Structure formats: C-alpha cells, structure tokens
Image (cartoon, rainbow, N blue to C red; front, top):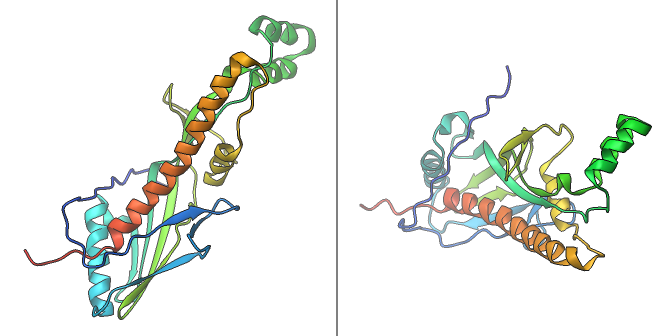
Length: 235
C-alpha cells in the first residue's frame, strides 16, 4: 500500500499549565542528526511522583491533542512506550545560492545548438536559474520509553522524503536522492561571491541559511515539548 501523504497539523496551547517544567533542547551534530546539547541520542525527562501509567496517559493525551489523526501516527505499548511517525510538509527550508557565472541564456542556447543538449543544460545549471529557497517535506519519528518517574525521549529521526518545494513558485520538484540531511548540509555550506555586485546576495543567502537551520531545530523542539509536558488536569 502506498504512503498516503497527510499533513498532520500541529497545535500548541500557550495557556496550559505543565506539570514538568523541563525544556527539551536539541542541536544538529556534524552528521546532521538531532542530538541533545551534550551530544546524546536521547534525553531523560524526570516526572517526580508520577507512575509509568500516569506519564504514559499524559503523553498520549498530548499526542491526541497535537495531531489531527493521532491513531494513524502512533504505536504504543501501554505504560511502557509511545512511538510517533508523522508527516510534515516543511521539515526544513534551505537556501541554494551560488554565484552566477557570466553566462547568458543566449550562450546557453548557442551551446545547445553547437555542442548538444548536455552542454546546454550544464550551462544553465551553472547560472542563477536554480538559486532560490526551497522546503523539504517528509516524515519524522519520535520514540519515547517510559518508567516510573521518568521518560526517555529518543532524538527524532527524519526518516523519509517525499518532495522538495520551490518556496517562490510553490512548485514540487522530484529529487529521489534528496534528504533532510542534504538540506542541512546545503544550509551549512556558506555562499561565497567574488564579484562586488554579488556579495550582498551572498550575505543575504548566508543569513537565510542560518535562519532555516535554527527554525528546523525550533520546530522539532516545540513538537517534543508539547508532547512531553504533562498538563495539570485540575479544571
């Protein structure tokens, strides 16, 4: 059965009172994977005085609130484990910018006529035609193990890719070998300009790259915190 692309919308309430005040903080390591700030592939959250059942029920309730169709994104082992695999149309945005070569479209057309289609395509690829902002859609997976008084949250796995969207033209681009990690690498690759008139564009591109990396981390942190913060049930 094919993968059904469903956007599971994410809802966070700013007015809920949390039982545990721990905030999950993540970074992207050199391998472009999410890890804790001390480099581990998991984070242990403390829930003093809470049984495994209470923690399980609280986290599962949050999952139901956070996703439109929670039963289709969740696998559970009662009182022991919760696994969420959800789809997002914006796992990460990235900025692709390379300094355009001094190559006009007319020259690209001439290359096509004189040397064949492969040279013409290469000429266009080397210019500004592919500079722009894009977003990557796909799946992410969160696994949580539960015991009395604590939960072990494994750092998210970005385990799928379905399409890349041109943010300006809102056009889907099929890149079968592309991944979340590749988008991270592109954002980490600093744009460089040798010509003065292109240097401001390179600077703007690098600011976007930094922004997109931060936003990708912020989004997944918000998701994890919304799921794992147990809410006060006195109402």
